[in-house]
Image 1 (cartoon, rainbow, N blue to C red):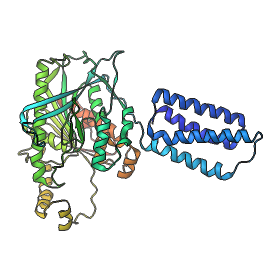
Image 2: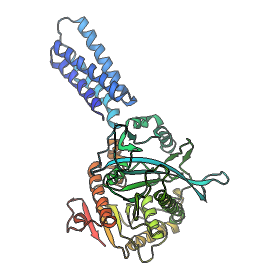
Image 3: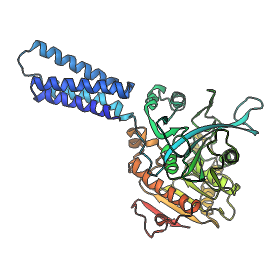
Image 4: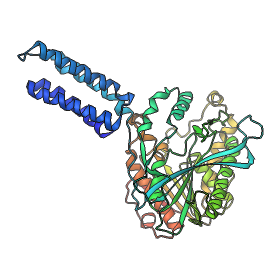
Length: 480
């Protein structure tokens, strides 16, 4: 929550306390304080609908105090029910919404650089878009770049979700959540400055390509993108249209999430689909190669070290990272964050250094098999289930090849801990039974991601990766 929202809640609590035990003069001072903080909230932070119950409570309580003062020049004993139960109950109800749907803040990145950001819209003329019915439709991508920047007085911070209205509408269609609930995202800003000049401290910078989960977006791991950029990396997050939750192109056309997705354990279906994501990543590498030769905006010309390119991805984007590493030797290192290894079997393992990051899986009732009726509900045959159960462990076991690398297991986190998801609402953390606070999880995840790319793209020795025991008790590291 924002500072004046917190002070607004505190002022209401103080008002109730002094009304319950204080004198009328003290109540008057507390009343004025609450009004003053409310005005500061409206001026500097702005209205949001989640605060409406608190606005109503404050106005109603002040009206109650005014009427009470007019009717009773001398203080009289008030009903215990109002003092002790009704007012605290109404106040508690009023603050639930702004707490459950806070204007959250992403921690400032730790690196020495300020962070700039720019978004590209590119069309791959060589590929047909297979998820639309429009003849001759070509594959379009959005790519957001975060980079080391030098800022000035004209610099302004980027919104976390510029297209928050369309994103809310997509969530409403997918999960039946009223779209307006997420309009508070318009108040959430990042630590990235829009179109800021590239820092001149280095002649060139390494490039890291990021692939989101399904259905994620380019911005759902903003905290990680900013952390890497602040430490001297160009970080390009691909938004995969029709697989992302929603994609809004610059001309306001919308690419909704496709309904043509395989069943959750249809390994053949996912294997076919991942080829699109690999080609997306390779096309993005081609585009950055062109920008390095000649950037029309003048931002990246000659500034990308094309010999130092890495990739990381979360969930299905992690699977895409594995397959792109396998297909394209321009990538020198890669990280899979809790992704199932769909795609081609990696013969002889990956040739580049690789890190497999995952949550700790606590299995219960290992021998339980789904019934044919349960499989039919998700549209999967017993044969497909058996293939999934047999094939995935084999694929995981052969990922590490000549390049070596690390397997990192983190206890106490969940699949979505690799993203910003749990910042959106404390209710999400409760529903998923999250043990570690999200920012604590990020600190561990980002520490290992940064150490890995520093080692293999910048040739910096890493004590974190190679020390006998991790400094984080929740982390287990295996060198491969």
